[in-house]
Length: 366
Image 1 (spheres, rainbow, N blue to C red):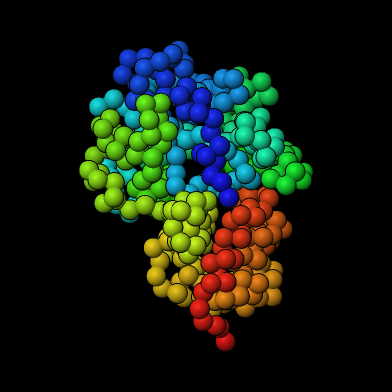
Image 2: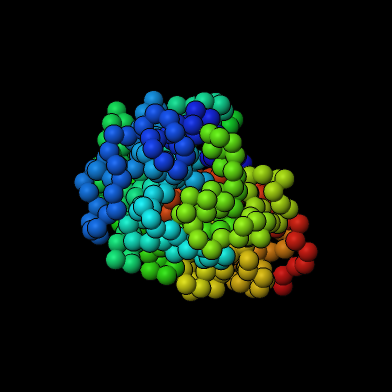
């Protein structure tokens, strides 16, 4: 399981940070002729270009001057999509560090995430078909979100508040053809995953950002870079003092259990937590959760129906075949598959990691 960031062309990392003047990434050719401005309305513009945040050039995402890229330790699996994340803060403002929760961002903050599917997962430099760019912005203390879908030429993306489904085929790591029914979420569907404390972004947390990013001048820790730019206040001077979620795709970043728990947090915990959309299930999948019942150990599902597959418990120590969680992860049937939205194909590496973790657990269930 290789994260999307590991497949980024180095040229992209050099281009997106280019800008004029005091761009956060350093000097170079300007990526866009416009200048980002703080949004003042809860209504997003009709086109992505009006945001002056990102564009497509030479088959990849290019950032406007002053916009900063970032990445996460363990990203959400989205039908194998590669993702390009960016952040922009109004001049003179900063986010406030939080060791456990999403950072507190100032009004006017803009986050983007662009999604693209590769034509062949075996290629080191595949052709990427860019599908959408999601924009999140904060106005008057509240976050808002809107998806923009790219035209075939990659020259513009238009607002898609009602969402859509794109059928796209690609070759997987074994050369087999896979067909994804990729979901561009509607505004309502976005809220299903982001409703923990009212609508909030999911990615900008210390434990996800505490990693190096390949900036043109050399790799640097993202928390340190944000702090050095004045975009983050209150972060520890030493990243080792900040929490870090292991990279599920990297065996050197943690144990099987740590990486499996990181995967479940990134892909499931946004709903499976007491304040999330699936809070009523009693299943809490934050990597920090220590209560075995909350983690699903020998826990019967509350109302899984067909989703249980006739199995009794969410997690059966030592028995992945008898556990509901990997069963649902392995399905694409809408009534069974988990997560319920955002995935139409199976992530074999993610399933294998979770199965390996369960197989290594001691104990048994009645």
